Structures are given as C-alpha cells and as structure tokens.
Length: 142
Image (cartoon, rainbow, N blue to C red; front, side, top):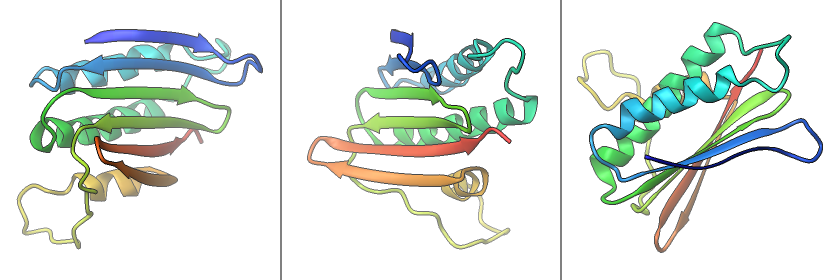
C-alpha cells in the first residue's frame, strides 16, 4: 500500500486521499483501514462522520476492492473524497468488464457485493477504458 496524497481543496469543502494497492490479499483489509483513518480526519472536527456512515463506507470499499482482488489482475487505486453531503469512493482497476448486480436470490451463496453497494450508495457510475475501469460510488453522509 502506498498513500499518494491527502489534501483539502482550495474551497475547503473537500478532503481527498488516494492510495495504491498491488491487488494482493491484504488489500481488502488495508483499504477498509485506510477508509476509516480517512474519515476520522473529518474536515470539521465538530462534525465527525457518524458511525453508520463509517460502517457503510467500509463495507462499500470492502466490496469494491474484493472485486478487484478476485477479478482484476494487477494494481488498483482507491480515491476518497469527503464532500459536504457525501463520501465519494472511486476504485480504479485493470479489468475493463463492468460488474453486474445479480437479481435478489437469498439462496445464492456469494456474489452479493454489487447488491450491497447499490443498497448503500446514493449513486454508482462505472467508466470503462482499454486499460481497465473506474467505479465511483457515493455514500450519503446523512
């Protein structure tokens, strides 16, 4: 894991952090821990992120990075942007195939990750490129 930057925007309303992972097994736990540490550095000390938001963000990051470890060989990048109304989570990987949320099936074992992400997020965008994809999810702060 290599943290590449943490900075507040000029307007003061966004706190950003970026970390790169090699895609190994430890990346999932490291990404969750990175997210928790990032959210503990809330832009306004008087209003830290509620525990439910931290839990939701950790779960979304865990599901997205798990998909990278399972299906995308090579490195991945996790970008976090804490805005006034949402945490934006962006995961870049080397696999250009768009993940698909499967229909609800309580009898299915596994492959519920995108269902979980969609349930927790206010928005989800996938952008594909020849070298991989970028998934951007927004976890509301309220």
